[in-house]
Image (cartoon, rainbow, N blue to C red; front, side, top):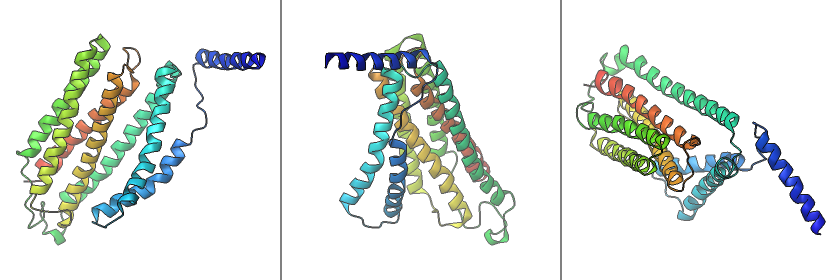
Amino acid sequence: MNVIKNTNMQINMKKLNYQIKNPFYLVSNSPWPFLVAMALIPFILLIVDILHNIQTCAYDKILRTTLFFLPIYYWFYDLIVEGTFLGLHTTRVQKGLTIGFILFLLSEVMFFFAIFWSFFYFSVSPSVWIGNIWPPKGINPIDPWGIALLNTIILVSSGFFANYAHILLISGDRNRSLYMLLVTIALGVLFTAFQLYEYNSAEFSINDSVFGSIFFFSTGFHGLHVLIGTLFLIFSFLRHLFYHFMREHHLGLKFAIWYWHFVDVIWIFLYLFVYIWGGK
């Protein structure tokens, strides 16, 4: 028995040494992407039911939410173990992950490009059905110099704090880096709160002409991205708190900050075009 155990240990050590020496890392078969994809449709249908005020069983809500977020948790757990604890994310692997994340951001850019395209299509040449004017007749748009301007200042300043947190981590000042990340998260939550207040105080809804549809669709999806970015930063803050990030190895935090900068830039274009140019 001891001979078999020693033989298995030697085989495992050889595999680990091969993976460490090899710049590439071939991941083992994982069930989490498939399970997340299968749980996504029931979870989206649950959100649709909630938005349409359709009464659903509490146990059904808990089940769908758990089936969606539990595989995501284990998926992220495997990634953290591979990259942080086993050291399998070599420089070559990190380059591949970086390229993949950049392509993901480009896909997000094209998504918002389509939204802006629809906005300019209807606003540059308004049809007779909306009175040949933009904003359409009977629509009182939101004042761009009120909460929208305050939210712009909040979101842009949060980007500076996030970038400063990255600089402090590289310089070795861990405590101040954590503090800057916490400030960034607080500003993201504050932005979302002001956005919800603006929605509740708006004099039009998503059903009011094409203006209402485009306004709430564009700002709503941006708000969703702000929420996802805030959760991304919270997750990175917790990892930073438990010493998962080092000066030379902090790809997760870098991706979170990149995503937050993407959210900042999209909001600037939304504010300039949808609020100022296409509003009052």
